[in-house]
Length: 341
Ligand code: SAH
Ligand code: SF4
Image 1 (cartoon, rainbow, N blue to C red):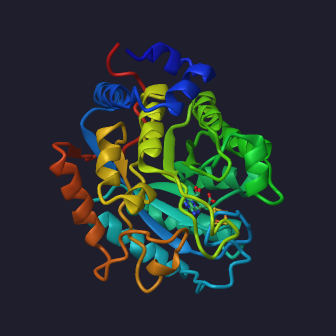
Image 2: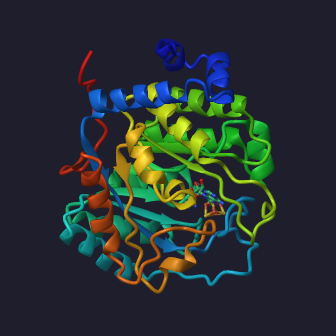
């Protein structure tokens, strides 16, 4: 029998042990599913994502959008197109939009504020995922009406973080996430699984950090090597370990909103379904319009590059109902009070 209390107390030795062997995986999965049911219920929330720019000044070693990658076609969506797209999302009955991009200075404090002000009119919860910005900007955007901010911590191992991020540190990333929390954002963190050199102990540190932050949203996906990056020849993260991390995250932060990530769906045809079976309660249909969509190439093999660009909405809804779960009808804010016990 697994010791749920030791998981929830983020006992690092115990978590490392569980991550090292597969003996207890089925029980971890079952426990995560029960906890998901008990704390956040049967609803799976849809968050429509618009990847509005693939221009980035950063050089994260794993990412296809890194500034030094000259092999992708770069784009920036005009503000009007982003706003139009948000309106369409609202018309499709979705209640949350995620605005994601590389760290792109074109979208200044004022431009992002304008986006928030306009998009709020469509009665959508707004999530920003545009990387590290000035603390002052986070404050202005919160006041303008942004509700949530997604910025994965990527890895909670300071050494590994430093290797993967030229000119950045885990300490700095953490300071940003704490500031977002302090400002009242629903704050999303999360990590990649299977990064080069990452150990089970490092993954245990990720879970401990998610608990310390009391992350409102937790995005966990496999690392997928991208041929256009310095990590081209590395091995990627595997399905089982990624699912185990999703399940453990659910046990560690029972009321968090946890997506079945696109990366999980990209390494296995049923990756996202399995994620929802083992703890996830959010899915993020891709609403990036064409012709831009295929150019948001974080990693190869990314799913959902359809011709009919609203197809992801129906597809994800069918996935949810196919699993016997319900499509969320509200904004999907984090449940404030623990539902049971
Ligand atoms: N620039 C923003 C948002 C875009 S990147 C930011 O960095 O926060 C969104 C996420 O894509 C990152 O947090 C990272 O975890 C993930 N990602 C990037 N490259 C990846 C790869 N090769 N494999 C898997 N996930 C990757
Ligand atoms: Fe830029 Fe985000 Fe990719 Fe890093 S992970 S290179 S910040 S888009």
